[in-house]
Length: 245
Image 1 (cartoon, rainbow, N blue to C red):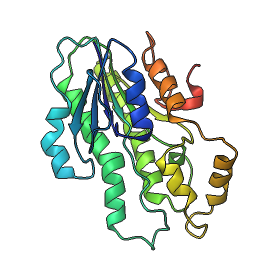
Image 2: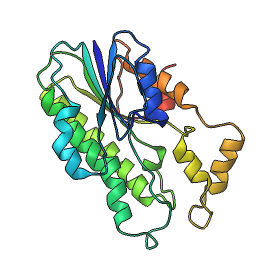
Image 3: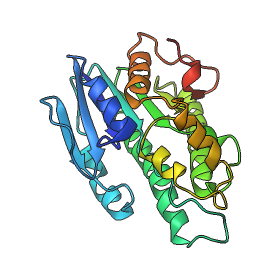
Image 4: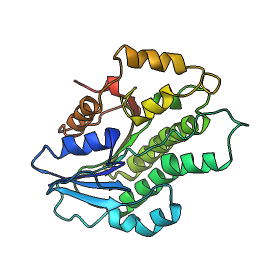
């Protein structure tokens, strides 16, 4: 059985990834989110609020059960938040803690526990961090989000180098899925331009039907992960457009 551990599995891209993975008869998914929205015999829900660091620390062991018969194990750190859009100097300080906890600190703890729990297994083990193109360029109003995703890219690169030096065989990648039609995009379209200068462009993308649908993005990602040698890359940080069709 191939096991996927997917955060943010209750909606958006996370739900699409979960549903697509479950279409494979040899796959079981452990979904990590606050609420369960999927019912399936091979789906196991682990309730967890990734913004609650104490709860994360106390419950991580439940996310990664012993899997001695697994054919492969994949962690997808998909859960993420944009937070309130607005400029530095115009935000409450708690905003930065909230966004970085969910987008960076929780994924780092999940990666750390995954690597510790499943070290030494002679099976394919993969960590896929869902990042953003905003990690690579400044986007006004998105400072906390952009910074958290840039740090997640750096964490992925560093962790992959460490695993290579250890010769563990663990594969770690960070993937920007592009502009996906999720609740986050709806949030972006409703922000005034004085808080986000690119608001009009994102509205135009939506009106022109240029947003990718979660199901299509999920199908491409899961198909890529299931390849016999799924993740060859000179750089662990990738864009969806770089994946094979």
